[in-house]
Image 1: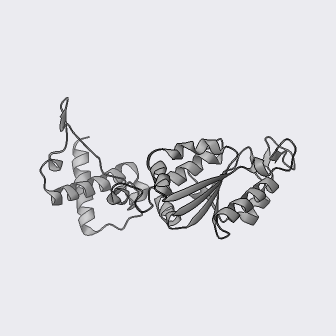
Image 2 (image 1 turned 45 degrees about the vertical axis):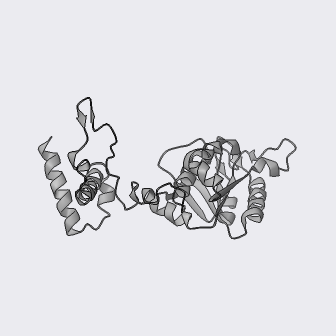
Image 3 (image 1 turned 180 degrees about the vertical axis):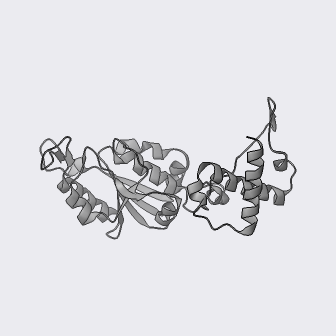
Length: 248
């Protein structure tokens, strides 16, 4: 079982993880998520957890003491070796490969910041890794933590109904996913590619691989540039590009 601790001023936001795949994973005891609110550890009579930044400037900064005490409680609950993750625009860019690495861990603690930021001393002393989910600004780390948790949980063994699903997701092999279709095969003149209806599994696998290569070439050439394509892959991609260019 993956044990997860979340340090957040708004733990109720994580109710979204009670649904879908993360919800079923919790019900099936594949993951245990516990929450720790820094306000519960505030030594201020008003339960304040933030103060004005030294040196002046806008906004408020989360104080180290409530965060440290919340983290200490989390480690006592989950285990002292728990990896501490802080959500920050300064962090490494989170991707599928990072999710796979985190899914192999036993204990994770996510720290969701708020306001203008978190006292740097907490980050330097207690954070093992910093992660960013993208080059944009969020109201707090909760949304980023939920994104990361959803991605990690779906990679846990038995979290998905079909064990192959995670292997075929976009980014799992460094490429975007191929297009998907379901019934009806003809909807108002829009038809499913014939190769998917013929029952030739070898041809279907070839088509899907070509589409994954082609879609990545079209939409994320940066990902494709990182791939070491086989001669067969290059041939499939060249054929895709030739067909694509003939239609524009």
